[in-house]
Picture 1: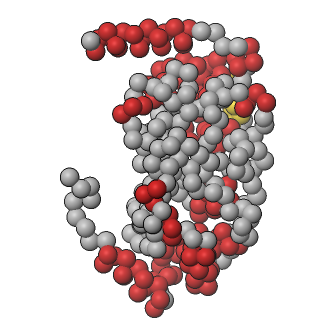
Picture 2: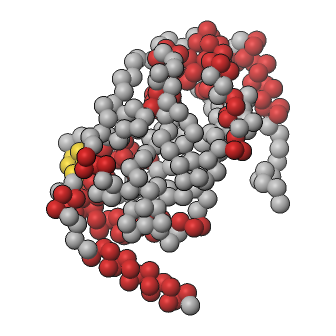
Picture 3: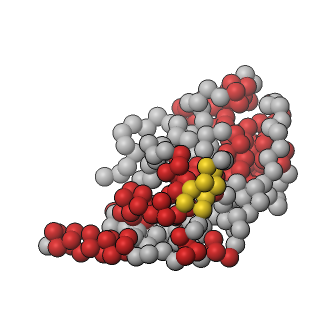
Length: 287
C-alpha cells in the first residue's frame, strides 16, 4: 500500500514538474545584489529540495506537511513573516533570499546555505511564480531604520515600561518566556496554534540575530501571525528601547544590554530572580 501511494505521489510530482510555466512566470526574476535569479533555473531546484513540504503547487500541502507541527509556508497566499517592508506588503527579493539562506528556528525549515548564491536567487525567483500577487503588486518600500542610539540604563528601563504599556506581556509573559495569559489561545493564518517567542531561550528569533532584526519585527510585524506592526503606535526611539530591554531577558547571552542591566541593583535583582525561576529539568513536556 505504501509503495502504491509513493508511486502515485512520484507520478503526480513528475506530471506537475513537467508542466511548462506560463510565459510571465517563466520570466520571473529575483535580484539579490548584483546576482539575478531566474525562475526557469529555480524550478528544478524547487522540485528537488522543496516540494516535499511546500507542495508541488507551492500551497504548503506537500507529503511531509501533515507530520509537521508548524505548517510549511503557503507561497500561493504571498504572505511572509520576515520582511523589511511594511505590514501587508510583499517582501523584497532580499528578504526571501535571507529566509532561504538562514532557515527558521523552531521549524523544519533548514538553512539552504549549502546552495550557491545564484541557486538561492533562482529559488527565490521560482517561489514568486506561485502567487498571483507578484504579477499585480510590487514589493513594499523597505522601512527606514535609524541608527541605534547609545545604550543606557534609562533606555532599558523605558523599554521595560513599554513592554508593560503595550501589553507585550499578555502573549510573551511578564518574564518574556512566551507564557502570557493569551499564549495558549493564539493561532496563525492557517488556524494553527502558534506560540509566542520565548526571549529567555538561547535560540535566535526566526528573522535574524541582530538588534536591527528585532527592530524590524516591531515596525513591520510578522504577517500571518498575531504579532502586529507597531509602526503607527511607537516612535523609532521607543522601538530601540524595547530592543535594549528584550536583550536583557536573554540572561544566558552575555550581551552589552544584559551586562549593563546587571550592573544596576534593579537589573541584577530581576535577572537573578529569572534564573532561580528557570530550574526545571527534563524535556518540559508532560507525558
